[in-house]
Image 1 (cartoon, rainbow, N blue to C red):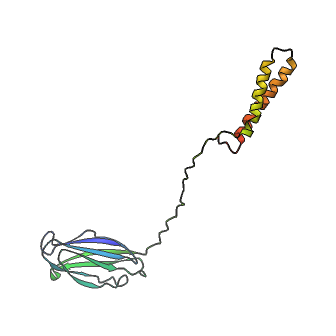
Image 2 (image 1 turned 135 degrees about the vertical axis):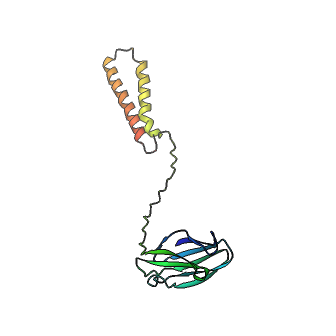
Image 3 (image 1 turned 45 degrees about the vertical axis):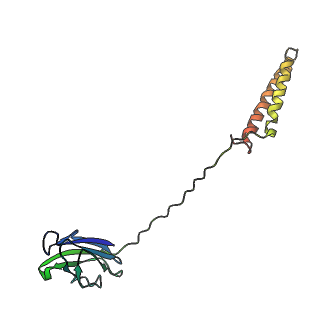
Length: 184
């Protein structure tokens, strides 16, 4: 829908001013003419002599007292082209022309954007399950026992227990981190 403002009697008696010299209109839509009268009530004639290929409108004599809106439908079956509209006041004393450019409306394809649903996922940090901490607990107990007997003459056993404690601690930490119940 295209809107064109036509001002009547704004600069003097029977004057005509148009907001645009050309009006682009899609086939199948309306050309809306807003007649705005700034003076005393008057008759305005709107006509076309070469618009039969685009519209059924031919001629209209409109009584304008204030603002009047008039619609000129453009056929959907019409193709691209141009026709003239004439605005006449003062019983033919003043005439102004405007070109109407008709274009076959191409369907506008608006891509549908996928809805992005953002879910706020509250991740609660849990303590690791007790079964995953068993190797760590055994390593700590073994370490405490080893510390209490360290002064004895068990040097080869010291090396074995140290490696055993480190392996148990590592197994406990890895198991706790990979546990599905924990979210660290």
